[in-house]
Image (cartoon, rainbow, N blue to C red):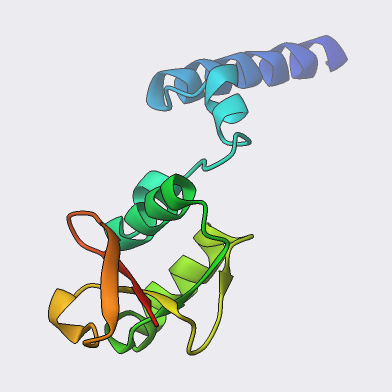
Length: 122
């Protein structure tokens, strides 16, 4: 009886592993990639991805968000999480916006991407 129970259990386990492997194309490479820096960023809003690219390119460590970005709770939370260890500060001289017209007169554009702009004000 024990041999039969063991054989059935082993058969079920082998079948489950086979079905799982066929249904999910996951392997060790998939899990290794999940621990690499920036993993999962492709599912975040394009604005957050572009902000990281601009911050990396310009070497800035802290920035502010204009009202169009900070007013969106979802965007703000995703930005805080994804851009760590970069710091979001209030009323900084360097800020991101999605609307180039929201920049003040004493500001100059440092960098831009398809959805976000980085400005520095005096």
